[in-house]
Image (cartoon, rainbow, N blue to C red; front, side, top):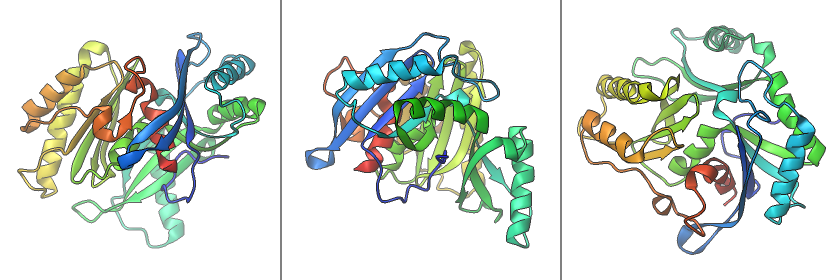
Length: 315
């Protein structure tokens, strides 16, 4: 079964990736151009019936596997990639869950560490570990010296639904990530130093991740009404500001990068909230800032940011 998260040290990833969302699927094929710029060799999107993929952590996601397989086959043909068998995949944000877990005490052995993490995961995700497909990455210790882990989870039976679709197509999905981690590769892969912020919105809310030196520092997945989003973002930024002071970070240091994806926020408004809360004059990153050359203005970066982020790992 493909892992939901990789430490990104494998020597090879495919240059092709698929992004799945409620109501749409996108496909990209990326290569490296001159001056370290990423070019889209091929890209295509297709609209899906709203009920075909119903993103959920707790419930079945795909109403008709054969119909989704047929749609993805049509999508690959439209991009001239019908012979491609190896893919990376981003799943809808609501399908997976991710948390940063902190251990209050030090484990005396590896078995004790596994027990402590299993207990944290049970409480954090509300699901027994034997029902989850899990992957974790150890993070630097916090200011108090406590161990921290970045954990991504999806239900085994939900992941199996997506795998069944790929099996029908004869495809191999070697890397499967939630949407925000696909998008985060644009911040991780461009060498930003210090702190960066990703704000990724979707129908039911948004996910915000603060990265410090390209590793997750703060992660919040917030389900809320559209009119509540700005207040929730403000609360997150206040927490981050307080956390930065507690960690002893340089008081004058600002975010070195801000990436806003999805249509739940105005990019300009997010930048305004960030600058009002943290000070400074940060602006949202555009594809050109990230080294991605889009072939036309008709192709939306929001649509392909997540799968293109995974495809970038091949370069």
